[in-house]
Length: 219
Image 1 (cartoon, rainbow, N blue to C red):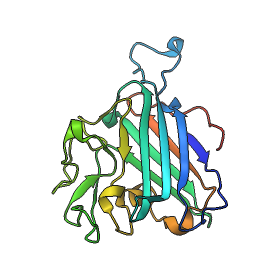
Image 2 (cartoon, rainbow, N blue to C red):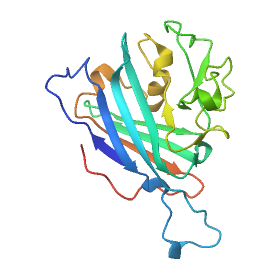
Image 3 (cartoon, rainbow, N blue to C red):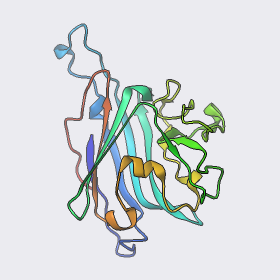
């Protein structure tokens, strides 16, 4: 769906202080309806929406920093996350190509070094809708079988104003965010995500199979 380049800040360390690595306001071409004249009666029409995608190599949560990613629904149609696929693509400074994909409900395990209850025997969705008013506080589960707020769950419909989050805040002072490791396998964020990195994120509406047809200007 898009590739974006973060702006640089001379006051920010290229290793520890790398904060905003990707900040995009995206017209979701991946889920924009095809021209009406080109659709047959049996083809599925895709919804349309504007999403804001942010990726951080080290997001500051006050007492700790940790890799993180969020997707905010700015406006448009309600999106059933079970109908979406998120694809990430990144070329590390070493030249290594890193690809990740999330489709359907998938879980990641916590870590015993977490300062919260997200320990090694607990699970969370790779992404979850961060809305306790709607889903309650059961995001962390004893099983990887799923939860209503997790991306890919039939109940996890992304509405305008909703935010899909990785469990960065649940990880606390742990050195890693398992969701970022899932989406960017093999990446060492303190070393492999320097300021100015370009990440491509595609969001595909799977029933229609539509993918983005334009690339936005770089930040």
